Length: 251
Length: 306
Image (cartoon, rainbow over all chains, first blue to last red; front, side):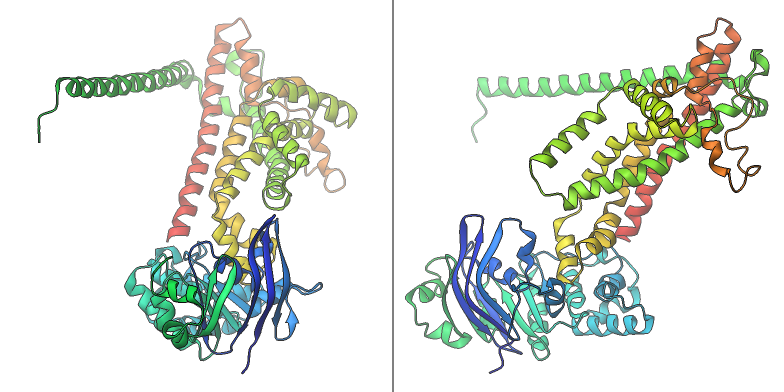
């Protein structure tokens, strides 16, 4: 099986506090991998390690390896900007730039120095179509992104991430700030997107993991308790703690 | 539901009364300050408005009050503001961006931050004396426009740094994350996202700082602004072009607050009338600057929300 992202005994620390302990995981291509677990279990820390977003936290450090196509993304000499272009991210709260819809999607291209108007137009349209937002915004591309609804803003953030053509898309609880109908649309979208992208999603919502993912990793207190195919995790988990969490005995 | 008891009723009554008392006191304080402002404005307008005509705006100072005008003064103030902006704006904004976005939080930056806050509170006469010692004497710029503008720039830079940092800090962290996640560098993130998002706040702070500086008198007195000149600073600009075109920066200059100060300290009542008229012009200039700040704020907000 093709696994573009391999995590090998990853430890993560904020100052002296360890928040991930020996996590090893292989992310399959063209599949949705869900990361679940109770609050504070390290799932957000984990996903933010995968494109080095935690670099911005001064006291943060890791041990272990994260291999993207065989290359350790934390190795010396690796350009973090290249990594983030290959491994895009969508955040918990929709965070469009306070600019037009068009400029939001075009920004990733502009910072790469692309100036060709035709190419940018085409990419903006293509990305918005992939994010299932095109029909709703095609006639108002140059209006402010902040005028969109929360669910539309989050799909815009997905379109913005797709515009730079990443291989992997990371989503950190992308529907936690959005109403149920908008959530359903995003879930449907993710099922389509996995044909072209490799998706890792952190979710607080077990039903969501069950609905959209192919594989599930269950985190508890910074450890990966169990990782396997979604159906197996939800029907016959190996570890009793997984079963307790999934059946709602805690969390 | 049982009716409230005697003590509950009493405490409710006390709460109501104290609420009303505060409301009345607050309104009274607001009214007092409004009355003071309007009384001042009214008095000045009554004294000076009839003196305000084209001749007043286009005449040089004179020993005869009825022939004296404020041409040199308002042109000087305009020059000072332009030069001060050109010097203070890049310095203040760059320092704020460095402190807010790049500097590591350590003892040194804490020390720098405390002292910027201190500098913002230093009396303006002290800046004037610093300008006299540093720019006029040591750098030998003379008692000219440039020395005056540099002194005023020193005066406003701490304020600009503080308000710019405030504006940068108000930009949500999630905007930065969004840019980084697309592969933007730190400088791209700051340049394309953070600074534009903070722009209304930055500009408002800058203009308010400058409009305060427009009325500063003490530092200009110290640097050596003059009240009697019969040519305009910058008038030699094209005569000496191009080799000496910046020589005018050493020209002696006047400014509105200086002219006002000079006129009110004279015994003849006619000069007080001139001072009142000049005050109207100075106030209009600062109101116009504040108006620009309000407009920019509105303009950017509209652009952001759409």
